Length: 475
Picture 1: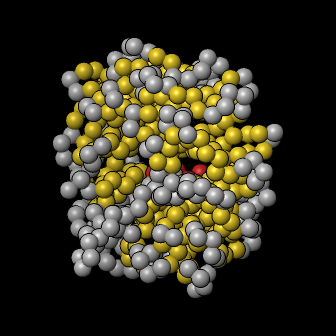
Picture 2: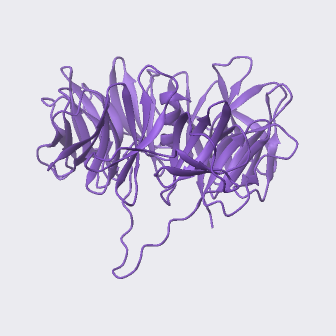
Picture 3: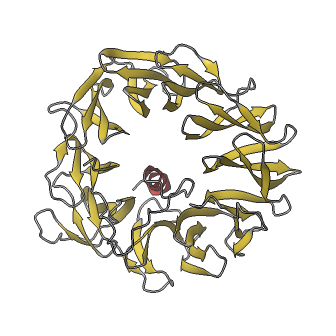
């Protein structure tokens, strides 16, 4: 079990732990049933065997993504249903990089790497035909290089001792010595995006605009700049300590401002012309999420959860006793699901009510999803323990607590003999299936899939498998 770090990584992969940028479902015309959700491929690694992908409904045999006869590892998901894998040399160092369709077709060798130089792929970003990869170095494990991969050309180092951030419009952005910069695909035409103080932090890319926080001495400044370095706009007040949070809409950004050791929450248009205080410093609140309509979820220093409307007016109190450590997990319809310590709660966005779904001593719950029959699925870790994580579900009123994925069917259709001893939540597919990793007593980990109830099935006959990514079927 990877405990909390693994849970966060999996959730961020499918955008479940943050409601920033969450989109509402498209309306369905009256009288027409909703279109079925597309199937997803589950990408996984099998120890000593390779990288594979299998359709979530089990209708196809697993597709091999790594080349036959070579040690390989999953690197990243690429646009248009493609996957980046890296091949390994006998000493475990990176040997080469390949791109392949998630169904195993159309393999493309992107180039070989110098022997014994790189240890891992830390991050990959694609822009058109170019792929930028951040590779960890073997000689200096704390340092990475950024390489550009392009069809017909050998991999080329385009930034040394640098951290890859994003790519768009024929350029990539990176962090080097604390300063955010941008460069062309070949690594040339380097331009500064941040401040000279060298303490920049990337927040979000929207289109070709980068939202970031720069620093001037001890105070932060919010900056919006195009990835080519043009049209830089510094938002907020020069004398204040400002920290960017995210885009509420394409034309509106949100940030936190520190005033006399208290926090105010501010929104402004992307040109900086129109500023609006969403939550005054008297509330001393911090943003925790953005609802689909752009309203901002905030938690106060006193431990209350509010909704600050973009339309103006005082923040709306959702839960006066949410706790001083609030994690806003997801906005679904007219509700927000959130955790605070040992509690998992749900509140109505109109402020009309809050329900405690679970509150047990030593339990650390993390929201996962709501099933079509209105059951809330959550992952439960145990405080102070690295083992024993499990999945449960509960009704929206907090009743009928039940375990998830404990009645397991093997790929041959026969019931598995044992109940999982440890579970890790991995992902929710667009079709609503729950994917989890499970370990049985004395048996290596397997991937299970189900509908959020007690029944689940193993997705593969491979042993000791690890979840890597979820890729929507490109059709």
